[in-house]
Length: 243
Image (tube, rainbow, N blue to C red; front, side, top):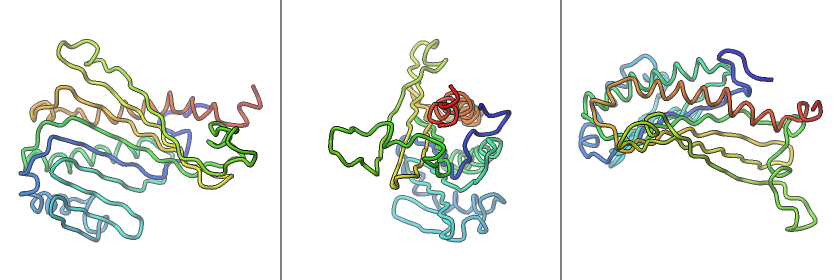
């Protein structure tokens, strides 16, 4: 079964949006002003992040009840938030907020440039061994002992070409996709997929002013609806039984 429209094959639990840039000390010098502007927004105001923690090199806004947090430092910005949705339109919308509020302030207040990585991590809700083949069953080495393993943490990654890296002279951009599987119980496991874009050379401020991040999020969603959905389908017991 493939998802229709903006639907995800699996229910989404949490997402994380991130941007990493060359370390710039002016970010640390202006963290207070950036945080004030972010807290004045409707999406990331005190109702979303009731607590604020200031460190020597970073500032974190957080919600202790659900674990949501936004951290800004001299080298990156990371938003991790609970979505609890099956609609990728919600992921797209949150990516637009991250771009228009967080990265906008980094550029306007701190004049941040030289970005070299965009990231979008999607963590799905818990999966059941009744419906899907667990990582232990699929990947564990059975020659290690007679008793089967009950837990397994594994990740694997792929590099993907980009149109810019393929066609433009002097550009070596690429995408890196990391699949993360975590099984702590014999009948339950979690899946997360981290979709990243590396820029070589790094993005100058005028290049970053274009809506690159929102296009990146759209490409990540397309990857989830295609490749990730098909891979998850290969683990589904009912589809394998029907084949």
